[in-house]
Image (cartoon, rainbow, N blue to C red; front, side, top):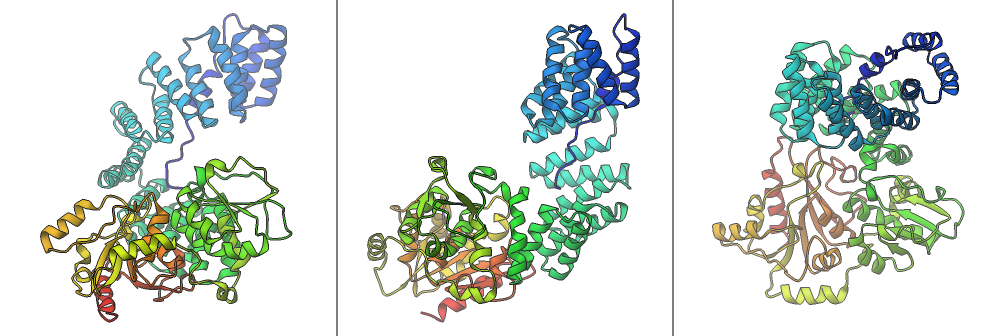
Length: 581
């Protein structure tokens, strides 16, 4: 868990249960008393009896809505409270309760509207302001949520919830220094509150202070020995430091608290796969289908269930394979589609649209579609792309089936680009130096300027394979060092991945960081040097200690040192390239 517990406060509900209209009947008084005492079932029974006799008794309608909300029936609660508000539109507390109902329904936009409307009628009600901030946070209005929390502080002077809320908003806004400072206020105000230390650890992890994060998680666990999320996040931080044994122990501790915890199981799977414990790793890897972290990366940002799941048995007439995660992952798992094609040659595979032309050429018996075409056909069975590993790479012996080249570029386009590039005896070296991954791209990226030891090698013609606008960096390199990086305007390296594949295929060798270019080059069987971070931001299939990976036979891996500096990696790459001229 990386965000504040966003269950809104129910203070308004408790207050409203005490409301007695004038003149109340004795039966109504008894029902309200039972409601106040927490006997919701009997209170509801009596409210319903009253309403059968007096259908227009709006206060009873409201209180039934309140009980519906308290007993996990938010849809019914919305209906009843709205009916009450049609008659009593100025009841600010009822409007606030309606906001809670919408929040429970995950209709955060309406929740914000209701909380704001309640505050317009009755300004300064702290619990309503706190609920508004939580709904704003859910809507990713982090600046608005921060302002609301600050308004709470202006009233209370000091409030741990507000401190934490402001800190989490600052974290989402990437203002890490301010986030740390305000969460420190929360810790000082209430030092034995485990959540404050947990959130503090999350921000420290964001700024790569991994040891500080581990210490903060340790404090949270000391204060709350059953703090599952603290164990899980501490494990992930240890994983980032390459402390595999220790990370496993903390994941195990998390799973002792909740064996079904999706994130802990998923991350433990990644450690197992990284260590080549494939059978156990693939089994746990299925838990990614329940992991919020993984689901956000699915096509459309949601888990689709369009047909019964397929587990590799039998021969469904129409199988749908659903792509997931990023471009690089889809290219990686596409290496197993040739195995699927042997078993079910007419299967349909839904992938990122930019991959469709390249995949169609490479695996012609399979039917590749875009996500916007996924509802055009009914299917007998479905499987997610990442689940092919469990079927076709179940153990280390099965790795012998891996093909060095399983994607095929457009040869006509490759030949045209090769003719355009090959103007001397120099080797053509494609380069890519940046990752746009929102979660960890920064840790995998470097600057074009940093590649100077490579770019100064005399026997190479360097070609821009980097996606995105690189003109400014290339112009600055020419201005400062007189080095020209060839850029092919005919190929859009970001949108035209089929063209990028042809451009990569036209090169003699590729040097890249861990990004889509690395996957494309390796899947095309092109000799590729991949410059990798040491631990954090390192994906499992690049492993940790080897200069090769069985998943991509044509790739050579060079890793950043523990210091986090790229210089040693770049110097080693330069020496390696110099040796093949």
